[in-house]
Amino acid sequence: MTDSTHSTRKTDLKRLEERAAGPVHRPGSGGYDRACTGYQLLEPHRPRAVVEAAGAADVQAAVRAAGEAGVPVAVQATGHGRAAALEGGVLVGTRGMDGVEVDAGAATARVGAGATWRQVVEAAAPHGLAPLSGSMPGVGAVSYTLGGGVGLLARRYGFAADRVRRVEAVTADGRLRTADAGREQELFWALRGGGGSFGVVTALEIDLVPVGRVFGGGLYFDLAERPDAVAAWARWTGAVPEATTSAVTLLMLPDAAGVPERLRGRHVAQVQICHAGPVGQGRRLARELVALAGDPVRSTLRELDFSESGAIFDEPEVPHGYRSQNLLLESLGEGAVEELVRRAGPEAPLMCVAGLRHLGGALAREPEGAGAVGRRGAAYLVSVLSPVEPGGEGAAGGLHRRVLAPFAGQGVGRSLNFSFGPTAPEDVASCFVPAVYRRLRQVKAAYDPEDRIRANHPIPPAPRR
Image (cartoon, rainbow, N blue to C red; front, side, top):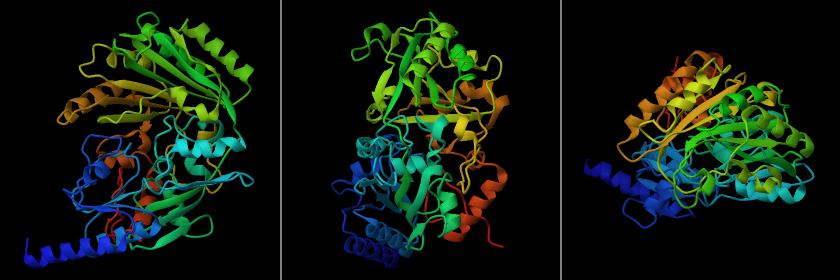
């Protein structure tokens, strides 16, 4: 490193600290490690500087400083979906930008870049309204929405990205832009389902839906006793109404305190149901599933306020390291479900949590003025996730490919939001039909031709002609 380069870097950092209202952390300083990690503990970011943004002006300062220094920018709110670490460059932490403002009359919410779905749900609930939130309340609402967003109400109301009215984002030139149906239309299109490659989003305005209570929860089947439970769920999904969104998770539960006694040490199929229709209809549908699958070991199904919707999937919110892969499916091929149960079961060399989500319904219909959400015609999503310690990524990747292999013939692509870990360019491209992917690359070239902004699932700029 030359003296002139070293001097430039010191100046850039000094200017960044002078410009930002929020804290700026550098390697070795207090707060740096916490700001670089988040929920995903594997491969934390290692930037040259972290700006814990207090508002949009701090995001602009960070992006401009990165541009002056010729280094990349990455963004982190909760860190749930972090795929690959930023080495060097500037990390923008948005967890402090977590304001949520609900306009009950318009049935909308303005959601800050760092807000979680829990905050949005709690703000909307007193008005009998709900966002199209995900299964885990602690996930960042903005990053989830940029990737499409398949949530608890998905089959009735569609993708979260399709309910975005306005986006406020800082693009690679440091400008704060407002994108909606009448302004910055290509940017507006790309950010609604194309991921975060096109700008640093500072806020979204989203539609809320009139849902106050739902019927939902889990049915837990012991797969040693009910080996056909997952196949029964798959048959059941063929006849449920659009008001019913469901999934099934396969996991080996430990024989340990904290696990319900009847589930300890069992290989379990946990069927998750969210029915946004009449409660009586939801109860009838659940009885039909039990008639197909047999009696569950445990049931948590009940009528509940949507503010309690995190109980439906009941996912742990303790930070850890993990990797995951997925496939979007046109159908469930013969024998594939049974192979999933076997390959992801107790004999697997690593712990893996396999899942199937029922899609279709409103997800399959493209609304007028829709964004860049890819592969709307998929009927199911299959995913597999493993807890991973540093150095274990290769073994987990090999296992995940083996678990997903029986579904290859029905695969139509991948989902951005269920890919946790570094993703090959061809895998990102597979999340979209070719024409949409080409258009996304053109938008990237228009707003970030030097590829300054690095997203979890990067889309490169189209080459200059």
